[in-house]
Each structure stands twice: as structure tokens, then as C-alpha cells.
Length: 150
Image (cartoon, rainbow, N blue to C red; front, top):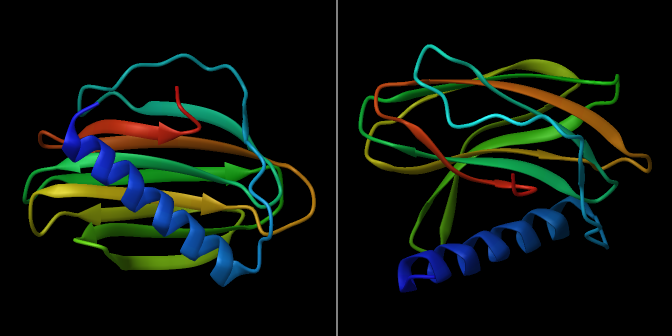
């Protein structure tokens, strides 16, 4: 793992700890992925995932964007609302571009500058939540990583 990837992983860990602390979550159980194989899409080909997000855990999609690239995630749950945000990082600072709490919706982002931008969904409830996400990328945008992995 490169130095840059290790630094990014540490920064993501700090963001998660801050998010969990801010939301009052006290444990971070692992989310369980419901199998749905797919690869990073061509811009017109939607990328889809289904995950079950455990209480106190999160699902995240990290996308590498060039300036002007777009990303849109249409999501739905089995009925329970999840807290969500669209964020990026500038050094150690997390920059929240948008946030809310919904059981379904479409999140959109257009990059003002090149870099990594993330869609994150957090389960603040007490029961697991099934989450379905369809991601459409524009320009040269590509999925860098996800939590859970895969």
C-alpha cells in the first residue's frame, strides 16, 4: 500500500470516528454485503450494490473525480431512513457538501476540482437496514473504493 493510500485510509478512519461520535453511535459493527457483483461502470452503465448496514455502521462509495466530473447515487432502503452525506477531504479537514436523512433519494455532486469525493450512509437505528444503490458517473470519474469492500 502506498504512502498516499495509507494516509487516505487513516484520514477515512478519523472521519468515521468523528461521524460515529457525532451521531452517538458507540460501536462499529461490520456491515454485511448482500452479493451483487459488478465492476466500475462506463459512464452510461450504472454501477449497483446492495448492502445490509448494521446498526452503528456505514456504507461508503469513494469516487475519484476530475474537475467537472459528475456522480449521482440513487438509493433506497427497506423502509428505514439512513443518515447520509456527500463529503471530501482537504488535508485533515472533512468538507461536507450535502447531508440529510432519508429512506430513498438521489444524491448528486459535480466536482469543482479534481480529487476524491464520497457518498456515505450511516445506520443510526437499532436494526439492520437493507440499502440498494445505483451509481452513475460522468466524465472520467471512477469508483476508487467502497465500505464494505467489494
